[in-house]
Structure formats: C-alpha cells, structure tokens
Image (cartoon, rainbow, N blue to C red; front, side, top):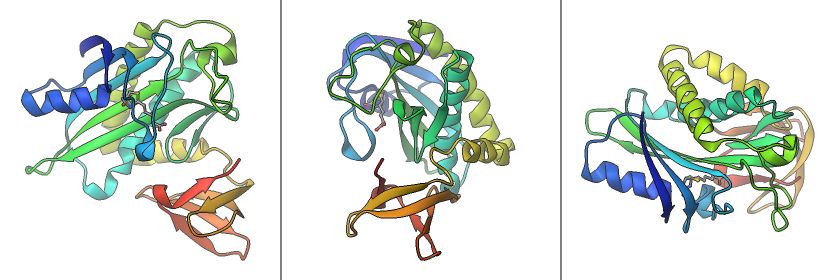
Length: 242
Ligand code: BTN
C-alpha cells in the first residue's frame, strides 16, 4: 500500500482522481488528509469533519473486472469493510443505512463516496472515499452524527485504522469477483431498519410509510408499501425520514 499523507486538501477524492489522470498509480494507493476544505458527500452534499479528529481517506483501486451491472458490489464491499473494522473496536449496534451510511444505533459515524471510471479495456478503476468519524466529540450542529470516540468513550489511532481498512478492503474487493453472494448476505443482514415500518419521502409524494425489504443487484432499495405492493427506488428517488 502506498500512503500519501496530506495536511490539507480540497477533497482527497478529487486529489486522487487528478493524480490518477496524470500518473500510473499503484493499486491501493491511499491518500489521507487532516483537513478537507471541500469534502464531498453523496448527492452533492458537503462532508464536514473537524480538523485532525477524523479519518478522511481515499483509496485508488484499478483493474477491477466486473460488469457495469455489478458496480454496486464495490459499495457493498466498502460498507462491509467499515463494519468489520469497527466491530474489532467494539463499536456497538452497527448497521448500514442504504445506500452507504455506517450507523451505530441511530447515529451516522461514517459515509462513503465511490467514484468509478470505466476504461476502454473493459476494466474499472475507482476512487473509494471514506469519511469516518473517529475522535470528534462535538456534534452540536449535527444531531444525527456521532463518532467512534463518542459511542465507546475512548480515542483511537487513525493510522492504525487506515491500515486495517485497506487490508480488509483488499479482501472484500477480492470477494466481489470470487464470492459476491457472501458479501450480499452480510450486507442484507446489516441493513438499517430492515423489516420495520418507517416513514419515507420522495420528491413528488408526501411522507408515506413503507418497510425496507432489501436491495436489488443494481443497488435499488426495495420497499413494501401500505397497499401491499413493492416499489424500487434509486438513490436520488427516496429519502428515509427518521
Ligand atoms: C456521505 O456520507 O455523503 C459520503 C461522505 C464521504 C466523505 C469522504 S471524506 C474522504 C473523501 N473525500 C471526499 O471529498 N469525500 C470522501
């Protein structure tokens, strides 16, 4: 693993994407930063992280041989990686809030942002961005967020976490090709609020109740509606209200 440690950067994902466009990077090149000035989250959101407290990292992976239809498997491999690493630190009540928030009970402690590029030889290279709240304890303006330090009342070594995450990510990305069923089964078991009636909202509808059933191979959320029909939603199409 090649590790590039930065003090401050706009976004580690953008930095790594830029670097991969100008030079041939080793597989699993990792960039970390103490601070991001333009950290990006899902769907154009901003990712804020208190300076030096948390893990801000991006991992470059290349030559991934899966079809476009299986691209959601990278997402599953990455979320599972975080859950598995967090378990080793006894972080309680871990789950994955679709599509890719890592929760401890009802609090988000990590998010991921994966950006893929499709090569002409049929392979995919990806920048896997991970924001993990590690030692931040002040979440005054973010009532639904928390950190490892808050939930177990301890502090953690970020460098050790980077190594553990990359090791586990290698294993799980290997499983994308060799045993994706295993990854899916684990992901399914960990789905936040699965089987529990929850309020949802789409852009066009008022709030409605639904029950999460699972996720399709392409990453759509399957929800049982009150009229006993099933609906599938893309990331941009639905929001869980909780
Ligand atoms: C989300 O939950 O919306 C995803 C958050 C992803 C944040 C990480 S921090 C490292 C990497 N660089 C970015 O600009 N974003 C990701």
